Length: 460
Image (cartoon, rainbow, N blue to C red; front, side):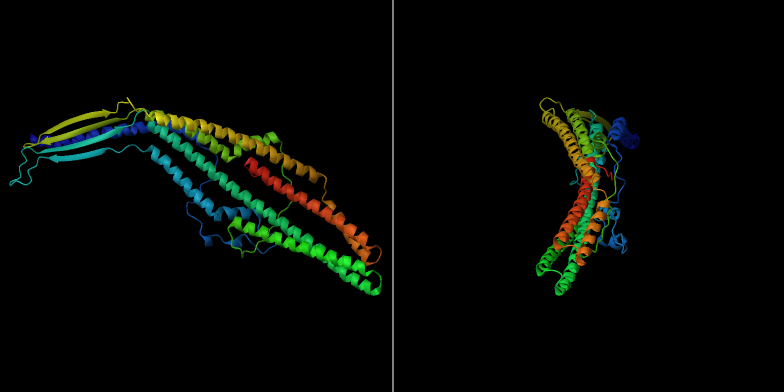
């Protein structure tokens, strides 16, 4: 009969353990409905999955993006390169992975605790005296009450969604920074082309004027004025070259390339984008701005944290079972018990107050983000429309007309048909027309980028 009890005792412990595990599993499964609601609220079409391994310096072949052809480094390839090489984005991916670990931890249930005690064994006696010996096996499990698991999961999921939205915003900012630097470099290359054309023209005019001076066709004062104008254009060419060096250095920095990398950019400034109204852009901004998504998710996370704080005020239940065996025959005796804290003094008042204050603050942060988006869209849209109006008054033929006027004046001056004053006036007209035209194109391109930043989406 004693042997029968000894065999039956462990079965009791196993049965109790199974029941407690089933209870824990049932509570975790009971959160599925809340999980689905929280998941539906937090899921958005964000970025696709990404590798969690940093990009090594040699893993991106720069030559793939910098062909020796006429087009060189394309804008799309430049943005792709920046995404792949950016150490900031790689670090952000790991931070996002770390935030996703909070969702895993929120699902975990407290582990059961097993205790084994042996007392009153006469180990120093010979033979060993086990008459008064007692052996105890105890299993304890904490049962979470008040919906803590579901509230923890909902809070962690919304926080992770906010972190993911922040990552998407960072990716978008990297792409727009590249576009900004790329357009600056292309515009600087265009400025060099124009400055070199002016310098080459006046260098040729100086040589022709010196020949005419020897022939007595022009005054020495006119030749001196031409030489001074040539020096002015030489200085302008030097300034344009310095601007290009600065723009390329900025582009290399945004692409995380070495300063020895040879870059050539090509951008069509005359590309027209869709004509959008301000209300449509504002609606698109609320839909696409990931910082607005993040603010919404943080509000929901703060709201769930309030629920969790109230749930934490509900005391948890401690359930335990125990198997005791006492000498000398060691019969099996089974016992159990429950324990629960009595919330007389502490009912989690401080955490409830803190979480409610954070929830209110997150609501005001969301409203602040909404107001910021509204102002950014309105301001950038006004600048974009102003640039469009300026461009509408500048036809592309103005470049050809200005070149014809300048070239005709240069030929007539070399032939002696017009004087130096007429030549310089024609050159001034040409410079004003060309400068205004390309400056307007450049400002329109920059305002397009500003509008994209405000909307949170690539439009053009």
